[in-house]
Image (cartoon, rainbow, N blue to C red; front, side, top):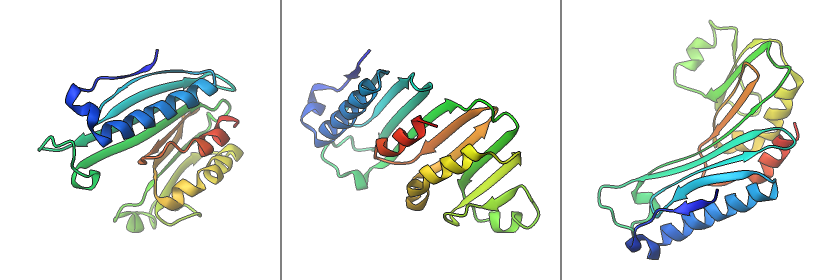
Length: 187
């Protein structure tokens, strides 16, 4: 299945429609280059696209953009609109069942909580993130963190979870970051 437009005729001349169409087309071509499958919709205000890559192991990808504006003006700059832009990358990592790891952005109270909870620590790469870990430390986690390092530094990582052999990486980014995803695909 392909990614399709659900835009109204008035949206077709919007620069935001063109940006979203280009974003979705790039996503579609990337997934096709990996012999994967895509589906989704887009218009001038939003997109919601899904991709599934099978080899070398199954990965499910979601990219979502929602624009919330009360005026409905297709010519407003994106800075004057409220946006939710996210990406989720999910896979299974067999053999990590003894570990539970969550990495998320730091909150104000975390400095206080760090003193009492020995399962929490600050991520070495940047102090903007907290790591919660329970169970054995695994080598693949170090590889994942190293691959994601540019996204941690830029603050685009929203959270990373490895629970019950399921890896979930969630970003808040307007970029595809296929260069980083390519490195994760071979883990």
